[in-house]
Amino acid sequence: MSAPRLTDAEVAYRTIRVTPVGTALGAEIAGVDLSADLDDVVVAEIRRAWLDHLVVFLRDQPLSPERFLAFARRIGAPDRYPFVPGLDEHPEIICITKLPHETVNFGGIWHSDTAYLRIPPMATTLIAREIPPVGGDTLFASMYAAYEALSPTMQRMLESLRAVNSSALADVSKTREDRIRDAGGGDAASYEAVHPVVRTHPETGRKALYVNVAHTARFDGMTEEESRPLLEFLFRHQVRPEFTCRFRWSVGAIALWDNRCTQHNPVNDYHGYTRVLHRITLRGDPPA
Ligand code: SIN
Figure: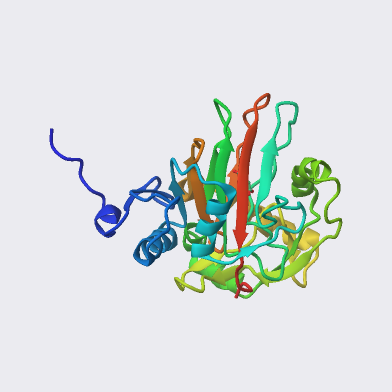
């Protein structure tokens, strides 16, 4: 039997194997054990794969919370999520849980994490602790691809706009309520931030569309009514299937995505089962 053909991405790495899972974004990384102390070369290659593929997945990494945090610290600086308190011993880690009696899942809408903060996270990483026997996948979309597919005139117009992002929009607020209640309260504040509609990635220099249906309320200087038709077009456009990939979780699988150029949406198709993941966000820069 002949050896499987390596993809272009696979031959470009020395210490890891990288297999794309979609044409727009997403790749699985193999050949690395995150429970060991990682060599700088390995970390640099994981980071390069992540910048190239926007979201990377590593399977069979049953890390303790300490080791998960140690991995996250090799990629960036862990930050706190404003609404849900973290684990007692590791406040940077929050638990994302959906129980058999619950019908609403955390973050169950297309979004980029906490776009309503002045400095949204650079990245988010999740590790799966318990997975339903069916369903519970997470979808990801490339906001580079979404921006690049627009006409040059639309791109130029959007580049001149800024948008108001809020934590208080109803569709996303309800996805947090169970987690805030379980935590015995949490932060009741609401957050708002104005960001460019098209942001330039500080590491790759590529342009990405930076509005999302969960948080973007209106264009800065326009009313909600004036903003709605164009925002509704962008919300539909930015998650076209050809800009997406889908990840089927397994226990011990890790996802690491770049919040500066992606959106994600956990699919809520597993009522009656438990799904538990741990999540860490990594500090970013103000979008520009
Ligand atoms: C999130 O961080 O938005 C949740 C993603 C997931 O549960 O797959």
